[in-house]
Length: 593
Ligand SMILES: *[C@@H]1O[C@H](CO)[C@@H](O)[C@H](O)[C@H]1NC(C)=O
Ligand SMILES: *[C@@H]1O[C@H](CO)[C@@H](O)[C@H](O)[C@H]1NC(C)=O
Ligand SMILES: *[C@@H]1O[C@H](CO)[C@@H](O)[C@H](O)[C@H]1NC(C)=O
Ligand SMILES: *[C@@H]1O[C@H](CO)[C@@H](O)[C@H](O)[C@H]1NC(C)=O
Ligand SMILES: *[C@@H]1O[C@H](CO)[C@@H](O)[C@H](O)[C@H]1NC(C)=O
Ligand SMILES: *[C@@H]1O[C@H](CO)[C@@H](O)[C@H](O)[C@H]1NC(C)=O
Ligand SMILES: *[C@@H]1O[C@H](CO)[C@@H](O)[C@H](O)[C@H]1NC(C)=O
Ligand SMILES: *[C@@H]1O[C@H](CO)[C@@H](O)[C@H](O)[C@H]1NC(C)=O
Ligand SMILES: *[C@@H]1O[C@H](CO)[C@@H](O)[C@H](O)[C@H]1NC(C)=O
Ligand SMILES: *[C@@H]1O[C@H](CO)[C@@H](O)[C@H](O)[C@H]1NC(C)=O
Ligand SMILES: *[C@@H]1O[C@H](CO)[C@@H](O)[C@H](O)[C@H]1NC(C)=O
Ligand SMILES: *[C@@H]1O[C@H](CO)[C@@H](O)[C@H](O)[C@H]1NC(C)=O
Image 1 (cartoon, protein in one colour):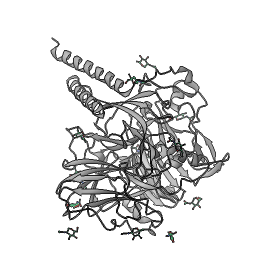
Image 2: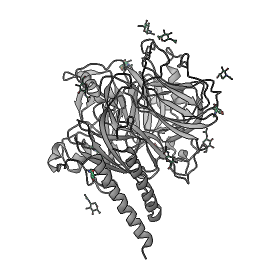
Image 3: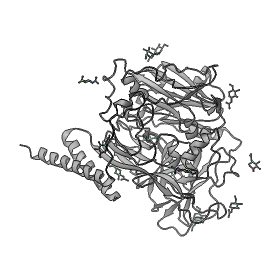
Image 4: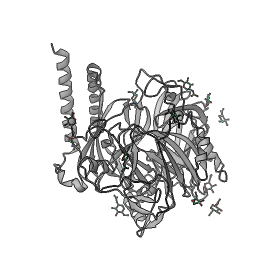
């Protein structure tokens, strides 16, 4: 199947839609046709099944602009159910498209399902991935770049190029074997390596990296400045990212422009996304290493778990050689990484998706209406199973999505009684949901009682990261909050034995997932949904359930069987038909009397 055909189809539809858009005052549409299937790849030299999109691993970058409508037809060619979620895309009033089990029935194997949503009032660097049962450990991820509209100034000059870089730990065991390990109560143990853009490390050391591994090369021109969008899409390892002899000018994180600062390296935790501007200001006496090395582990045991790609100037005089640039030397200094995280601030004077400054929403002067302290603990045994918890509750997704259960008034699927604080109750497994008040202002304190870094993510929202520190959070900790330029993002790290506080304005109706991005702990239950119901009822503020909504669980009888899908090429033909119709319509409009 010709990938070009799809690319051409997408391009044409975007053009046609853009024209229709400008002439009809609607927002443009971008169409994507994805076949999600296994391919065999050997990123670390061991052949394994990885999840690819249109045979690509990583998947294609969705390059769209604020307010575009995105239509993604996903064909599930895996042998198990699938959902794709769009990390950081807010799905305003439309949790029906969020692609997690609380809002969507999984797409059965062999079926297709079409997501449709608007990328409303957002800019920045995000990514998508398969959200079910550790599938991300097998790939299936790709970038989402949301460009600014032309009328809005960007706080830096147009870069000479744009690179998306996925970094992440990787196991040579496949996701079904990893799942089995967790089900059997085992730890996943040390990963086998770190991939960069789906590829293994450059052979910087013959004894550590076997011969014949394909590595990533970034080709650049001397003197130019490029934007690097770096996403940690791994399972559970925090990574230190650095480019030998080059400064990383941090400019954006998950949809907020940051105060621009140079870093020689930055810790990027699982699920986090950052944009850097990097100027090619070195003499190219050789190529340069791009490194992602594991953090807070015994590095003499984890030497093989290091991602290495190559930065190649067009005038480079030779291959990169010698030792990798040093990681931060802070093994016994817990504060270094936290201070680096605290140094990431929002640029309050620049506009982002809208022309008004990012700082015009003065979060520091809004009264908090709801407070939740969410505390994790090291894994515990509940009903004979090894599970992880938040406030003693281990989330287990019901067969009926929460939002769908509400729509059809099915009671008993979940309870709306998630405790606001950790309790003394014995740990339990269930589906307990946070009752969020629409238009309220919520403070969430994530307290990490485990021994590894966690990253917590909230769907449907960006939150302000206002504070983090070691020890137990208390009311007095509020005195240390940054009430002015805390960065607004969707994923924050919480250091072991420490807390992180976030503030979030509950202005988006729906039922939204709050979870750890660390796949093993997520799989074992560190997740909770926040229900933000419209007090006026369904069909007022929130969007209606889409016509193609899938049914399952208690509602499975409503589901019509899907006809066996055609091949990819026939669906492209269909798409072409649509474009043709669109163009005819457009021509008809122009020539209409
Ligand atoms: C994963 O590997 C096991 C063997 O270790 C194999 O039985 C299974 O089919 C594989 N699953 C996938 C999806 O490749
Ligand atoms: C992404 O879209 C923007 C705006 O439409 C365009 O300028 C840019 O060249 C595109 N980038 C890629 C890699 O296609
Ligand atoms: C499946 O794909 C076909 C062809 O692209 C499309 O017409 C149909 O609407 C899709 N079905 C769903 C449920 O999204
Ligand atoms: C390669 O790595 C090994 C193990 O860490 C180390 O002992 C050796 O010095 C390294 N070789 C070079 C050339 O750096
Ligand atoms: C960042 O470093 C570059 C050199 O790599 C320098 O030209 C630039 O002025 C620095 N910017 C800031 C904001 O420190
Ligand atoms: C913040 O944004 C403004 C407006 O675009 C820009 O002039 C300024 O340099 C930025 N400040 C920092 C510290 O990045
Ligand atoms: C190039 O720069 C490196 C340091 O970044 C320096 O060691 C080397 O001598 C320089 N080479 C030339 C030819 O200037
Ligand atoms: C790291 O592991 C090595 C090898 O097992 C051990 O000798 C060393 O003490 C460990 N270092 C730390 C800081 O735990
Ligand atoms: C916040 O609450 C205080 C009293 O607790 C009240 O005086 C103030 O007006 C409130 N501010 C807003 C913006 O509602
Ligand atoms: C949930 O909160 C709303 C106010 O936002 C309240 O009206 C409702 O009674 C609460 N439900 C439960 C079960 O506590
Ligand atoms: C976990 O919580 C217990 C009880 O509050 C406390 O004694 C312990 O220090 C905490 N451990 C970490 C790593 O936070
Ligand atoms: C939603 O509202 C529209 C317009 O008021 C109405 O036509 C439609 O039947 C409503 N749908 C549902 C599911 O209530």
